[in-house]
Every structure is written in C-alpha cells, then in structure tokens.
Image (cartoon, rainbow, N blue to C red):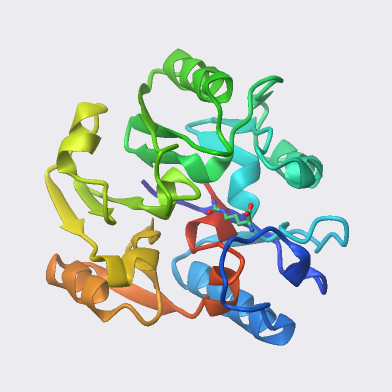
Length: 261
Ligand code: CIR
C-alpha cells in the first residue's frame, strides 16, 4: 500500500497528563518533542506529506491521532474512542480529514472503537475487541469495510494483560509478511481470515517493537530492538529506527502517532 500523506499532532505541554498504564515515570516534554520531530522526519523521508495539527491543551493524548479515525480505501470513518477523556480529540481530526475525504463516516454510540485496534492487510481488516473497542464499534466498522469490498476478521484480545490495542501486538508489513508479539501467532491471524505467508515472531523482551509500520519502501521500527530490525532486514526490508521512548511511557507506539493514507 502506498501512502502519500499523514496527519500528525505534536505533543502539548501537558502530554504527561495523558492516560498510561506504564510505570516508567513521566515523559520529558522536550525529549518527546524532539522524538516527534524525528518521527515526522522519517515519514517525510518515506515520501509522505504531513498535515500537522496543533497540540490541544484539553487533550494530552492528542499525539496518538491513529485512534481517532480509520482510513479505508477512499473513505474515512471517525471513531468514538473507548476512553472518555479522549472523545474530544476526534473533532480536530475530522476537520483535517474533511479536506481529503468526501465520504466521512462515524462510529455511532453505543459503539466505541480506537484506530489502534484496526490492522489493515491489503483488502482484509483485522479488528480487535479490547478495553477500548466494543462489539458494537467493531461491528459498525466491519459493515463499513464490507460495504467497500473488504473482508474482515474480529479478534478478541480482551483477555490479554499486555495488549492495549490489537496493533500493540501485531503489524502487517506487506506481501503476506506479519510481525507478531507474544500470544499472537500465525494460526490466530489465519483463523481470522488473514493471509499469512510469513510471520516474524517477536520475543517478550522486544514486544514493544511489534508495533512497527510499513511506510512505502521502509519499515519504521522503535529504536533499541535489534533482533526485530535484523529479522526485517534479513527479509529485504529497509528499516528506519525511531526513538520513541517518551511515547512508550504513555503506552503509545509508532503506529498511533500518525494517520496514514
Ligand atoms: C491511551 O491510553 O489512549 C494513550 N495514552 C495511548 C494510546 C496509544 N494508541 C495506540 O496504540 N493506537
């Protein structure tokens, strides 16, 4: 899949006030800004033009824009984030998406859905049921995707103690290649309709790195996870390692920092 644009939002001064289950201490604001700049530079290097939203003081989790919308083919669907304090993040993303998509839909109550629970693999969408995405939200997105000719599998990760979102643990690299962290394997993905030609299993000590993203001719991965980087390079992929330690402290990874289309 080729991407020509991404929406991003730099962290605001109150970034440390966002939601987190991590116990790594508060993020450093200046370091988070530098790391976000590095992330944006990598996207630009991949040939993607950026729409940069302004930080919003009311929404410290605002940089995690991926959770607020799902882009599928020529359409976009605005989410209803499963965490109530994040619901107001959708409005500014909607304004930005409006200039690119005439077909802008919404997840409606009582459905909730976070974009982090949605993994597109070519024409197939995997949707995670999680603490953030409920059955109504997953079904609404599934219908939306099916109407547009995609197939869908819904994976229940609610029993997982380590996965905030489905994409916390899996990534589709392209051409049938997947990356999957502990507890997520080939059989599970295939049972939910995914084509799995190859899968790189990520060990528990590198679990955070499973949230990597293919952007055009490169794979962006978190810096500091050499085994996954080596495995991807061995398969012929060009990897760009990005420092995201300050976002990890807020339970965020590489995918959640942009909406790519
Ligand atoms: C949250 O808990 O909602 C944020 N602190 C982190 C969201 C990360 N999003 C993602 O993985 N898609």
